[in-house]
Image (cartoon, rainbow, N blue to C red; front, top):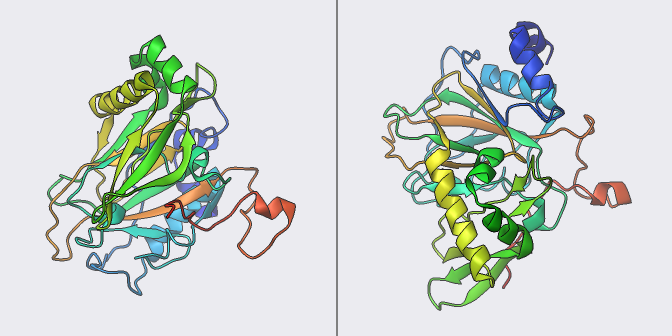
Length: 304
C-alpha cells in the first residue's frame, strides 16, 4: 500500500481515491505500466502452488487504496488456489469463466439483487501478468450511464417495472431450475442508474436463459444486452496493465479466444474490493448481526 501510494502519479492516485465516492468519477480505470515480476513463470494450466510476489503486491496495494481487498470461498477456491487473489488463465474443458472458447456475456459480479445477500463487491481489479499473445482476449466494459442513455424512456420504465429472472435448463431432462432471485434490471437514480445484466458461464449440465413474464421488459432487457455489445470498450490487457472496475456502474464481459496452451497464454490476477469504510468483510463462522450482513462464501443459487 505504501509503495503504491508513493509510486503512482498524482493524477492516478487522485482518480483512485475518488473512484467510489465521487459521482462524477469514471466507472472504470485502465492503468498501464504497473510493475510486474521480472520473470513470470509459464501460465498455469491448472491451479498450483505458484506465486507472483511483485504482481500480487501491486494488485493488493492498489486495492487497499480503494478499500479492502478480499476473496470469496468457492469462487476463489473452486479451480483456483484460494486466498485474496484468483488467477484467470485459460482452462479448456473446466467450464466457468476460465473457459476461453465462450464469450462471457455482460454481467455484474455477485449482484446483491440476484444472490439475495450483501456479498456484492464494490469493485474489482484485474492485473495482467501476461497478455494474450494473439490479442483476441478482450475485457468488455460497458458504462451503465452510457447504456441507459441509449435505452428509450419506455424501455427503462419497463426494466424498472417488472422483474427478470435467471433459469437453468438441464441438458439431460429439459427441467428448468430457478437461479438466484428475480431482479429488476434497472435500479437507483435516473442520473446514475445501477443496471444489472446477468450471465451464467457455460456448464456441462445445463444452459441458462434470462426471462421475464412481461413481454416489454423481456424485449427491453434483450435490447440492453445488444446495445452493451455495441457501445462497450474493448480492453486487450497486456503485461503491466491494471483494470479497475466499479461493479455498480459497469457491466463487463470477455471475448472468446484460442489459447496456445504452451505457457504463453493470458494470465490475469483478480481481487474483489470492499469500499465500506475500510472495514474488513466478516469471515465465515461468526454469527453476530453485523457479520450476517456480509459473507465471503460464493452463494449457491441453483435451486433443485
